Image 1 (spheres, rainbow, N blue to C red):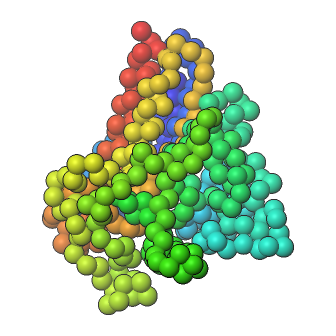
Image 2 (image 1 turned 45 degrees about the vertical axis):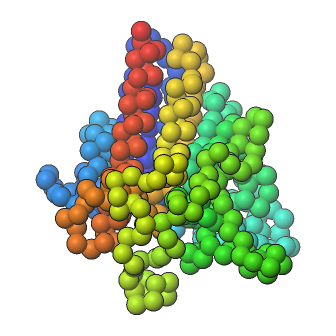
Length: 336
């Protein structure tokens, strides 16, 4: 049996042959209540979420479910089962710390708290994390592996460039470690993409775009005067205006969703092993970058910021559909 939830929707199927229960948890970032298709009237043109709409129709919508307004507190709560006020109520950059507190003086989840991955492992699950972590990175105990995930493919921080994986701080600056840059005599542009398993834990070199041709321009926070002088964004940058990126340029959420599908496909459907997968796409968090084929679908939206946003919603919904299809195929393999 597969059960999935997005903190927005629930989907559940059962098998009659006693198959183990596998769990897929989906956490979509910065997703507004009114930006979901099932909260809009039929025929509404600005939103396209047919796959998530189907999950809601088949499952249970928790329409009085509330989450914290920021990234890290929400994720810290989801990974610990605690109210954010008891685990992490501030959205600090990861270089903030209290040197007098070696347990909870770091950004993210305090070191002494039990993680969701650990609890699922105790329940006999094989555990896997994909996407945005943002629950701490100061020590190995703060990482997905340190919190009980057998494997992970992730980035650590609040946000990053979707194509170049540049590590960014809260105002979008990719030149994050000015002290290091000064010592090196030039800018240091860190890439925030990592992979971990039983034999390796470190940078995900193979998943990183290394060519300048994959860049879509500098980061912007649209419509916020403190970040974007004049309160506006530049026109949509670079190649995503076209139908596809140059060959070899990968959108990071394609990498994460394919990782989820690969875990499902690699699982032996005849075994009794139970899978727990936590998938946290980077989208729909800024920067508002999206493959051109999705951007083109929303040419009827005049505001370019909203057009980018709803294009990203459609992209995430497509990924949900691809993963649900993989789950259904896996279930059918178990049956036959």
